Length: 140
Image: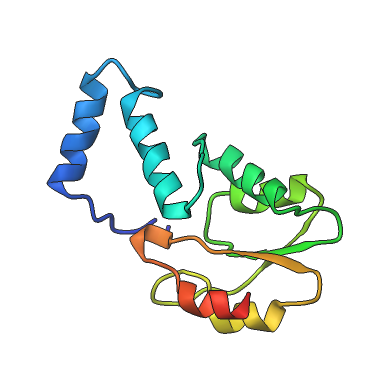
């Protein structure tokens, strides 16, 4: 079996999780409010709402109008929701090959798969390794 990856979890990460678990707020509350505020600042938008990852992907795809006849290029090295939420909206899912050293999307493989129907390239930071976003943005 292939390992999922080596996690880079710091003592401060562990302390933050322990603090949340010891609080009265596990799934809502001030941490969620702060995360939403931080997300608004990063995205440059007046309002952001966080939900679970599957619903977030579905919402993001729907927000940009992904639907029947569209294609979404993504990685096979991900949780099923990366592809299934696009398929739920009627889009075709195209899997691109990954880089051997990071298991992230290979930009050259993505570029070879782009068609006029391509509406999204959905990368995943596999096992803590950031995808090649600068290259993927140029392709998009």
